[in-house]
Length: 124
Image (cartoon, rainbow, N blue to C red; front, side, top):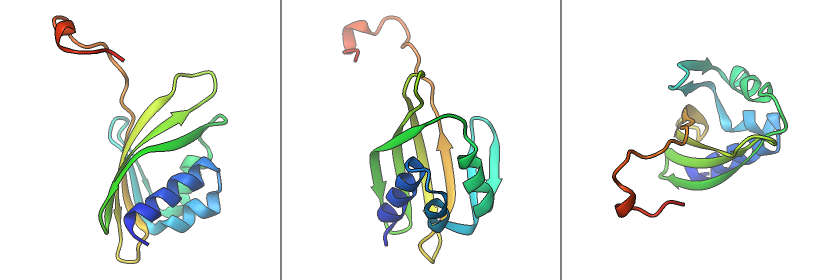
């Protein structure tokens, strides 16, 4: 499988909370990083557990996926009932066995644009 198929399978398994399937997409020594919180999780079992223990009945869907043979970038929509939808941005690198070896994950917060640009943009 190419990076697009592996990463899509990873997100689908996460959305379904199918922890065995999540683990099957990951290298034994996978590294998961969240730069905003400075969290790093090492190893397949730890990454699976990190996701499995996230609170709430959350779901996600892939909005964008761009990939080549060994790398992929995605944007996802993360839904947690009772909270505003969030956008996640993740970059993936696969190992030579076609499993995810590294993930860097960002969760940007929406913000208001600076004043003085209203005449240049359309807000949505």
